[in-house]
Image 1 (cartoon, rainbow, N blue to C red):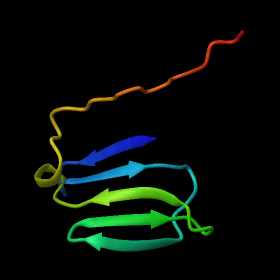
Image 2 (cartoon, one colour; image 1 turned 180 degrees about the horizontal axis):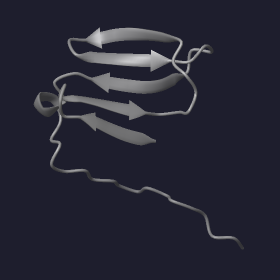
Image 3 (cartoon, rainbow, N blue to C red; image 1 turned 120 degrees about the vertical axis):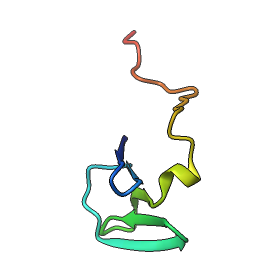
Image 4 (cartoon, rainbow, N blue to C red; image 1 turned 45 degrees about the horizontal axis):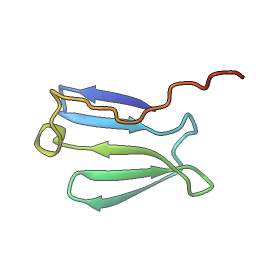
Length: 70
């Protein structure tokens, strides 16, 4: 997953997958969901992001980075 913030437009794009977007749906004012050709969520676009989320803080909980090999 990648978070990309564009200050010039105050937009935040959350890449959920490397697959290209084939369809988009506006779910509320300034929030667009992008889907691949199979209907899977691949990205979230937030316009006016600084009004929606606190861009000064990023908290990750229970994030599993890798697995130990046994």
